[in-house]
Structures are given as structure tokens and as C-alpha cells.
Image (cartoon, rainbow, N blue to C red; front, side, top):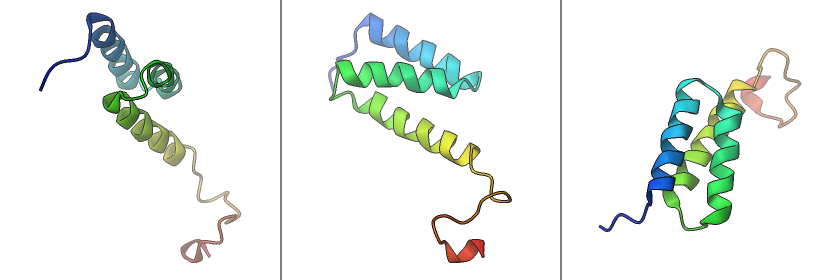
Length: 76
């Protein structure tokens, strides 16, 4: 499988992984969105972006103050 990432992309990903390790998910998401806008076929960036967005979604979910807007039966 050919490596179609240039040095700039490798540098971008190392910076993104550093942001993730520091739990700066918002900054990492912004960087990944920039990469996916430039290269729509970059599956690695797209997958990582989806994973980080899911992490942020679950971190921001507060079940005790939720008013069950989704009508989930398990929350009642």
C-alpha cells in the first residue's frame, strides 16, 4: 500500500495526536476539519475526527441534569 502522506501531513498528525494526549479535543477537531476540507479522501483524518466528536459528545452529556429531550425510555 503506497504511502500518500507527505511530511506536512505526518507533522499535522503528530501535532493532532499531541493535542489529543493533552485532551485539547476542540483544537484537534479544528485541525482535522481543516485537513478533511483540503483532502476529502483522507480516511485517517475523517475517522479520527468522528471518534473525537463522539468523545466530546459523551463528555458533554450530563445525565443528571438532562431533561430527556430525546425521549429515551432508559432515562425515565
